[in-house]
Length: 107
Image (tube, rainbow, N blue to C red):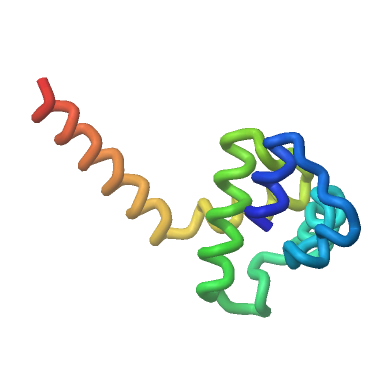
């Protein structure tokens, strides 16, 4: 997924032959497949949070925040479900704390 997004950002649209060599389809095909995969799902691999959600969620969250992934309802809903998990909230709080300490130390 990240490869298709990066190539799209660079304005490179691989031919069908290049898509086979790269191991992924066009940006549109990749995004459409991803949207179908997360549509109406809390977790990607079933009823429980798995490492697949960490990987996929980070890709979707990053893409939404940076604008490399269009803000489709499927992506927004999936990301918000993961973003609201207690462990993610703790990680965000830790990141803010460390960032504030580093900023203070730099001054």
